[in-house]
Image (cartoon, rainbow, N blue to C red; front, side, top):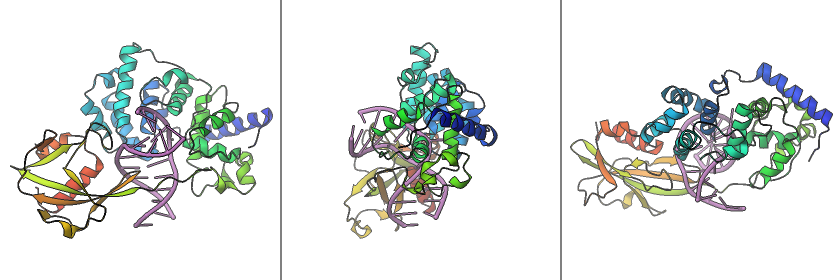
Length: 349
DNA sequence: TACGCGTGGCC
DNA sequence: TGGCCAAGCGT
């Protein structure tokens, strides 16, 4: 691992912030001002999610719920509808709980340090440091994927970023480098750097504004960084989705209140054995020969739609919903895929 | 600590 | 195509 002199640290801050001031993405909507509510909402949305995906969601969310109190007092259904399609839905539920905590436990007075901000539901070490530095000028590094990538290369840090312990190694190495006057801009500049020149794939370090500080690049070993151990691959699972119709309505089932897609409505999904084949279907009418596939981080679902006639007994977590009714709900993307496939089969109009 | 948790884009 | 990546957090 490289260790920088005070002189080198000064030069780096200068070079980085000068680039950020002239070439950074100043037009991002959450950078218009530093109100902590805007920063909170944007940071939660941006967790594991790309900027281009977030943009329309952020604008819609802020115009519908412009203040912390609006969010605190909103129906959860409204919040989830604003989040529909964005994924990781517990973020939305936690965000609203955070707004309620700020409004009713803190009387609207924000905690101003990263340490205290971590009390908010859904706000971990990264998000707390981002808000503290951007909105309250606390001198802390916001260690996220970009930070890991950028500084692992600049300083040739060999620790495995897949290990939770490594966060502290990076925090300690970066803390003395954070600009003491503009910590928020420093953190955001690193993010811009990580999503432009110092990307995960095909980095363009030759033209990077801090290429002279990039030791991995200078030593021609950039692609060895960051060091990251492998993830397990997605498990394959097969399902039948049963379609029951009654007076123009379709049977939906509410998923359990924990686990994958908690509390969301889908068609009744029956998991099959791994060696299941469509020819195994003996009851009902198969609607799609090729399964609908949907990939989560750890799961790969293959789903066949089967139209059934007689519902044995409606369970308490099942309801017949008309199109007017289910269109009001926030539905996960996999369910939208099933509805689209069903529509294409002209079974439901 | 390791895993569960969504979705879309890229090659 | 499948595998990996993208401004992480909670348990």
